[in-house]
Every structure is written in C-alpha cells, then in structure tokens.
Amino acid sequence: VEEIARIYGYDQIPESFPSLAPAVSSGNEVFLLEHKLRELCSGMGFFEALTFSIIDRRPLTQLNREQPNWLTLVNPQNRDLNLMRPSLLPGLLEAVRRNQSVGEHLVKLFEIGNQYLNQAKGRFSFEERVLGIILYGEQPSNWMTKNKPTSFFDVKGAVTNILNQLRVNFSEHPLKPNTYCASSQGIEIVSGEISLGYYGTIAKSVLRAYDLEQPIFYAELNLERLTRLDAKEITVRTLPKFPSIVRDLTVILPETVRSGEVETVIYELGKCLIKNVFVFDYFKGNKLPSQKKSLSFSIHYQAEDRTLQNEEINELHFSIVHALSERFGALLPSG
Image (cartoon, rainbow, N blue to C red; front, side):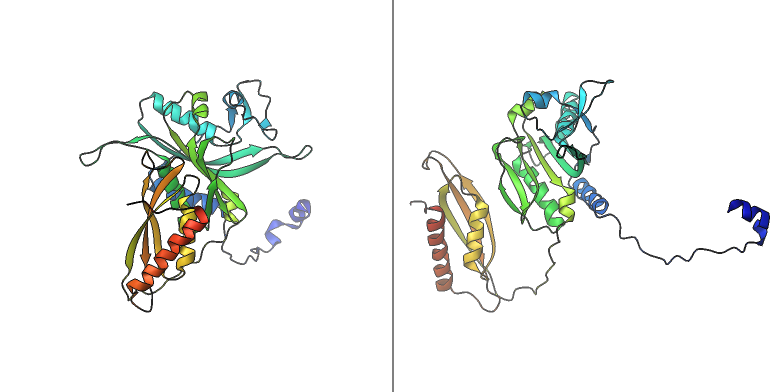
C-alpha cells in the first residue's frame, strides 16, 4: 500500500481526519478508588510507603505461616529474596523497623500494592490489589496533652473512617486464628458474604520475627472487592422538631459478647424511636465475676411526630433490659 501511494503521489491523496465521536472516559474503578484512598489516608496523617514485592520468606517460615498458595521464586542474585509477598505486612514491618532504628517515635504508614498468590496446579498465579495501614509508637506531647501511645482503637478508627467515606455497608466479626493478629485482637470486615479485609494488633511472635518489641497495629483492605460493592445511598431528612431524651444503661455481660451485637438488639427493639446508641464506658476488674465485663450505653430516644413521655420511654427501656437478659444473659449492676 505504501509503494502504491508513493508512485501515485502523496500530494494527490486528500487529507482527512478520522471520524471519532468525543467521549468521556469513565476511568478504571480500582484506579479511582486508589486515588480516593490516598487522599483519605494522607488526610488522617499517614505517609505513603513503597516496599519491594519480593520479600525474605525466612521470618514467615520461623512462624510456621507458610501456605501452599504462596508464589516462590528462584532468585540467583539474592537467595534471601525468594518469595512474592502474600501480604503487604512483611514489607511494612521492615519499614517500621528501619524507622525505629533511626529514632522515630511515631510511624503511620500506608501502602497500596499487589499481593501475589498461586492458584491451582496448571493455572497462572494471580495478583490482588490491597491497601495496608500500619501504626506504631506514640503521639508526641504538647502543652495540653501528654504522650499518647497508639492503640487498637486508632487503627479501628482509621478503617471505620475509610469505609464510611466510601459509603460501604459492613459488619465486623472476630478474626479466625492462625493469622498475623494476636488472639482475640483481630477483626474481620465483611459486607454481606464478601470479606473485605481485617485489622488488629500484630501478634508478639510476628513482632519478634522482625526484631520488634513495641505493639504494632495493622489493617488490610482488598480494593478489588471494594469496587464490587454498591455505595450506600445518601439520605436527607428535616431537622427534628421534638426534643430527644437520653437514658443511660449499664449491663454486666459475658466477655464474649461484643458491644456491636448489643447495639444491634437495642436498635431492633427501639424501631424508629431510638436515634443513636453508643458505648461510653467499659469496665472489667475484681468487682465483677470472672469472665464478665460491664458496658455502659447512652441511648437517645426521639420521635418525629411528638414529644415522648416518660411512661413510654420507661416501658421501652425496660423491654430492652429484658431482651438483653434473655439474649446475652445480661445483668443489671447491684446497688
């Protein structure tokens, strides 16, 4: 074709532009989510980290955490780096260790990257895009506050804020054992039947494998699963015309009962008359029976069409106490 055009003469061929209809690119959903997550994490004071995808498998081998679906490499240039990371955690732990060794007292990092796993024999390995968040150290003091160590609730707050900003419906459940988290200090995040990730306190055995001692808190979210979810609808309602009434409720519960389960029951019983429930106090100690804890809830009662009377609130309040007693074996504190 090029020879025909040359002989015929390029100057005799009329110029024309291809007919392309203008279109707006919708963008890649995972890419757009990554951009949103970077904004959210940076706004919460986290710094972005970039760690190697190839890691040293020896610390994980010491922990007996090897899995058959890990992707192993033959790397003659560096025999220590022979595993494609199955999680972002090992790289972020190394980053914390390096920061700790140079005197950093507070480390707040996040990373968005791939984790690699093998599929069944005869099939290609696959990559998953995930977000990892890690917290270590203590907040610096100032003239108003003293040093505040980072805690489990800091990473919980970060995860909750991210999922709320993404308008994701989610629930939390105790994490299965044999993970990177300490026993009874890991939470799995679920939306419907889809597991979105987890967060919790890193187990001491994992910390020792990476020459770390102080508590470290970690969260991991699967981005591709997040993109498959529908965002919650934003609802708008008028400001309340009638006053709310606040009642406190303190109950003694078995240690295994989670506060979220209790809140769910309270909302179900209250129907449209309970607008807000939250825990404001937790106690566990010698004054309570073994394997028991005390939780105090603040319950906000409010109707949209009338002012609630004490008799109506009392009836509902005592029905909640009765339901918690039957469902969880809850007791009111004596005295």
